[in-house]
Length: 307
Ligand SMILES: Nc1nc2c(ncn2[C@@H]2O[C@H](COP(=O)(O)OP(=O)(O)OP(=O)(O)O)[C@@H](O)[C@H]2O)c(=O)[nH]1
Image (cartoon, rainbow, N blue to C red; front, side, top):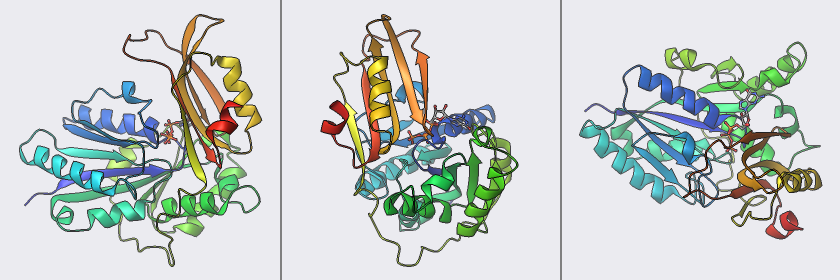
């Protein structure tokens, strides 16, 4: 029986997974494939839903498919298999949350009946070249962040060293390349920005035979890293976002959202990743959409964010 091809995309918070995934989906569609998309988010809603136009779009929210949402993942995998059998879709692209351990997702794909139904083409890990040294350093990151980053790199068959536009290409690139190779010497490795390596990815056939890390702690990744979701954003303007990010600079890893800035009478999307904040004016806000924000960091709490 033919197995449904699956691409798995993992990588730490803000490393560029969604940016690359959108390019992958477009390339697959340009090549005539009918793509199913599965997106997993830590928050209760997917703030990036508007970026995806696919009919066969599944989202698993408020947890991680590698641990708390394993049963939900299995259910979606059954649905995907049905869609593959009846010809509705012919390839799946799955994006884990920024704190997912790919090893645990591989375990599910290797179990019966999924091992007979799916063929994992590549397990991609996107790393943020501008932050990797910091995330792996005992001086600047918690054990949880360091472990997660290592697990994600270790389990990959294809590693993307992304955001190289943000680093010194002579000195820092060599350092981060060495760090990655110390953790995973075998995976294909591509250095790029904005996930621009799709042709290469589809031409690569790397080995997926990765064994678990010795003494790998299961489910150890959600103790310190917390997501705080703000749904009532009526009084949150651009200045407030700047202030919150600067006040919680030490703890904040990732933030994103949509807000209405009253002083400018303008809706904005914002993205905070790699210590950089980017604003984008929303051209047309649909009446069904509303403002919302998600902050993700170590030891964050609603009280800390709203102070
Ligand atoms: N400078 C630079 N920015 C990038 C690059 N790739 C992505 N970004 C930006 O980084 C931010 C986060 O990118 P995403 O693709 O949403 O990252 P993600 O890994 O899906 O983030 P999570 O939602 O935390 O899982 C966005 O503002 C992107 O535009 C890159 O190569 N260089």
